Length: 609
Image (cartoon, rainbow, N blue to C red; front, side):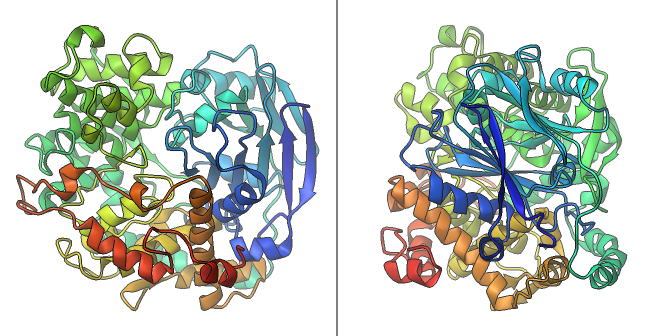
């Protein structure tokens, strides 16, 4: 095989046995890799009703055929499992240098089964696959763990690991690689901790085999020559201010979630936007492997209250810990971001859960004595302290570690949790960006923009602009971007590949550049239709897992705050998200029933029966 390495590693943590298995060529083509391969394996081997933190669950790490090839942004891997936060699937995505090194060991995927009796880590190179004791790094931060394991293996290896949050089974614990990059959402780190798996250390060699190296090189040269220019021409400003530059755009559109999603504008936005981060804390850009964008930010805070050094924060962190908590202290937000990276936690759920707690206190539902301190809107010191406590599950942090839905439900008001399928939303307010509401509700992992991001259309005009306040026709756009995201995630690319290298197709999108890259790398000779069908197949396969786990239309939901309470400020003032109307159209074009269940015809057509 080319592009693909052609084999997977199965690691039975219960017995300690590691064994290589071939990857079926037909599965590789039908599911592409990465996210697609992960859901294929979960559907085949995991009971969707199992306890996510039990030994019966599996944890799958998978690259794509373009990971490590030199294709721009070809630096991603996926972590797939059943989520302890949502009960649905996860497909958590990360970049950096780890994914390429992982693939160069000769494996497309690692499937972890069972549970080790004692803490272990996996060491993997082209000749070796073995579990080693990890008692000496259990309890250590992700940074300490990375340094210790590199010292005892190979200084040029790469590490993905959990911190204390994963060990303590914080339901939104992340898996951190290269210290600062996160497979962040849905609690993948908690599943890893439940298996007593502390880390994966990889040391590869050589290059990824390509079906047609000359064709790939020529196409890549052509694309790279224009990629930077095209990225610079978009309104995102990724190369200058990273993803933090999005703050100004969402504020201007009135979709910057503020005060636990009560409104879409924040008076203090200029103190926490990308320009402020660049001016005050940026040291240099930090690109992933083979990425000409370099949106990662290496930063340092010298403020003695919140001093620290690391990477970030990204836009989603700034929204969740900033505007959503009415905090305009960028030093505190950045410090809380560093803590999340070191302890291994998702910054979106962390910030959104603290904002939910702030509203519960304000409304008198949550007594401050149970928090253990004063907790008011805008309290920067509380943000930092509660983030630390959550990773350790100490004090009130033990409740925050369950996420906002369980916190709000505990105090009798689950309607105050900004979630779909119990997962907190990213930073785009759907009353002012209608398709984003549909994307959140129908995402297979719960509230997410990375499993389909129509904000490209609605806010940034990529590849063409659509009125963000209009709900009619948005089901077509949302479906198209979800299918595209499945292709991108499975190929091993970053979502930012989609910023320019797409073509509009019937108000949807077509993965034109991805098609050429995949065919040159793999020799699979995809047609455009076959590749787009592969994206659809992955979405249907994920929905099949959810259906078997008991999910249906009732779970494709948004809080009534967004569907019944009009936005009080900004350009979206007076609007609500018309989710139910969009859902009807969405299910129809997907070929699902009115309750959101894939029909037998659909399952047969995509080979999922």
